[in-house]
Length: 354
Image (cartoon, rainbow, N blue to C red):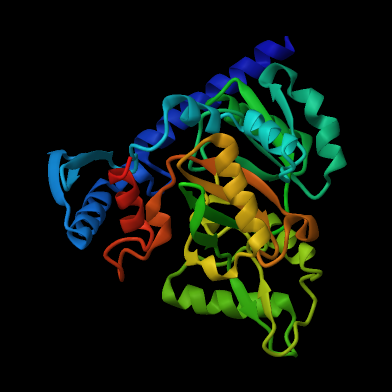
């Protein structure tokens, strides 16, 4: 009876998901919405290095330089073979390969929807929250739920993740912000951070008061307000703050680790928005380059969670939590101010040198 109820709940979740996707109720912009942006970006890069740019279809373009050609399909480049691409999407296998070679990854457990109750003890060991995600083959936050603390939330998150993959993954919430280190041909070439909301102390006001003042400003501009939710409380906690803490004059306090408050804890995307290559220490650089070698990937975004990118993961408690062998280059520049991402010409030159 229990499994039948679970399957009915999953069917309802599936119908709701199909309806939401049909209405695009999330309001999210995914890479498949960015075809014109990517076309313009690669056309600008081609002009920069003197390559010929030809449109084959709306989303497929051919670039030629000195008799050598390469083709681009929106965000997809001709770097890695199908085996490498498939392995990179298998999160438990990637964690295993990395851990065997000394790289830090989260504690995790794999399971399937029918035995989701077997993960309750894992959840209880991590009272500050867990993440549930599909174990294989997804990106852009699809099927991911963060800050899970209750059994009912664990069940709902497992149902959601199962819509994308029969194999599921649970891991603890890791303190810190998200960083993507872009590795090309074994060398780190660029790094970006998903910067959360930050408030600055005045030496008098509590964090709760600072949040109210910030939200009043945001509301007057019609911007999204900052909720005092689990992400806020978790973010404050790992910095040693409470809502009634009084930061020092000029002290910056991170109040959100997730920079898209509309999505709350459900299918939260990682949207990188700040270039931080200069902040990355040699240890993180070495870890990212080692990850690329382990995967045998020529171009890969290695995602870290850490409270401080200037120190090794062993010191910060951070981890490598994801890899992306089709890294979205739109994360690596401001399209309103720059014609293309800084690393793009180097990437195109590497494609021509194959």
